[in-house]
Amino acid sequence: MSIVKEMRERHTITPVPERSGLGATVLIGCAAFAIGALAIAGWKMWPAGKAPQAAVATVNQPAPASTTPAAAAPIFSGKRLGEAEQAPLLATCVADENFGGFGDVKNPQAAYALMKTVGAGLRIATLIGAETGNGAQLIDNWRIIAECVYRQNSWTLCNPDNRVLAIESAGAFVRGAAAVLADPPKGRGGPMVVREYAQARDRILDALRTRVRNGYLVADDFGAVQPPEIKAVLTQTKTVANGCTKQ
Image 1 (cartoon, rainbow, N blue to C red):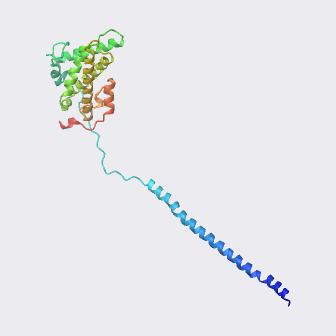
Image 2 (spheres, rainbow, N blue to C red; image 1 turned 180 degrees about the horizontal axis):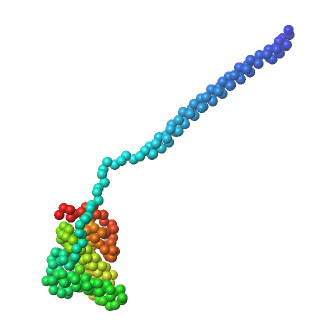
Image 3 (spheres, rainbow, N blue to C red; image 1 turned 45 degrees about the vertical axis):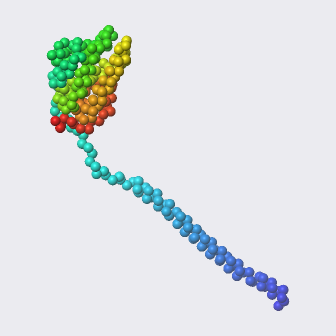
């Protein structure tokens, strides 16, 4: 056989196993690469896939029940409201040296009844547009009574008659003070009256707030018709105790 022919045969026959070996190697390499890629991808995805489940499980777990018992609401029973004219504190408060213009202070029940009658008449006259004056003495008498009542120990309001006196005197003075502050008196004394009435109103409202918090007075004791300042105290103050249970 000639050298040329032998070389041609070698050239024709030899590449076959080389292509076969290369193809198998490529296939094996591709398969290995694919398996490795899948393994790596699965490994990377594993924690990311599990984390949300753990988070969801944590979120969905019910909150542990509190072991602290809720504070019991104070209970009020019995007669809470009496008659202001029969209040034991009335004689003490009407005896103030600045109280005047409404009868004999030696008869506090009659003086108080006259104040309520005059006050009701003034409110009716105002509604129909009649001239009433400013009722300065009446408003000042309500201030004297209200400040006197709220200066006393809180337990005095456990008496139903004293409790009504506290409610009526505070409402009457705060209502009258609002009218004076809206239309201050003329003259030199005007600023002093405004200052005194504003300070007295604030003292009474602060004392009222304390007594409502401690249950000597509660919102249900008050009628529907109250000055806005008193309504605000009743709305914003939470009663947390019944002080009269200790008496």
